[in-house]
Length: 186
Image 1: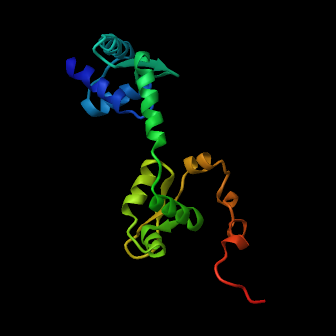
Image 2: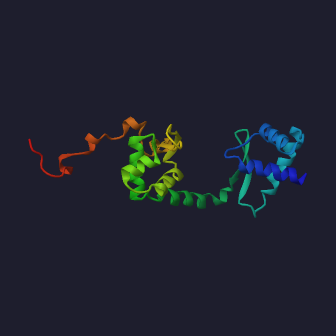
Image 3: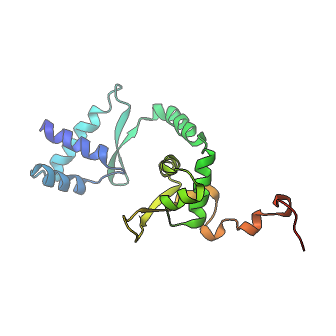
């Protein structure tokens, strides 16, 4: 039975969001080929819940919105808040900003096309933008090798306070006569 408890614990831990009782039951049946009643499952989950009440654990098993999930105990929320603030403060490099601008204005676009515009490799910049969830993989191009297509994400739109690509500033809005180089002959 200890193996079943560990499997339940792993299932709950690995689920990105909460997981409900019927899903846990179905996954156990498929993974371990065992039949567990709802009542038995509740008892096993109660054992896991009791285990995590111990002070040595930083996580606790919570039942929220009809599903189970592991959460950090409230006593550690200040530290977690500081971690999130720290991660949010990390600024993008100039190359990442340039890459983001190219993707925003030319989306969907392949990495090769971004590199042709910038003239340098963009592997690291694209990886950082994916990690920060400012861009997303939008599919694959219908060209040889089926390269990935990149586009801005919903988080990009939220971060910059726009509803869509059409709300991005247009070149005519950015270029002014003060930015012009050379003389114009009229």
